[in-house]
Image (cartoon, rainbow, N blue to C red):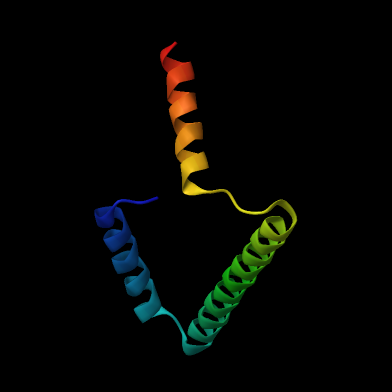
Length: 79
């Protein structure tokens, strides 16, 4: 993940290039960005469905169980 400064600089650099681009290029970039967004949404929905299916099959894990697992892992690392 990029730092805030790196991200801001990248956005500025992209904006410079966008302002220099032809309209047809802007249309293509827009279409690609929309497709990337749609793919991200599809991946998110798939992950949600898989998680729900896993919960349906295996049940859920309580917060107490998670805390106990963390404590056990810490104790193993210390020992």
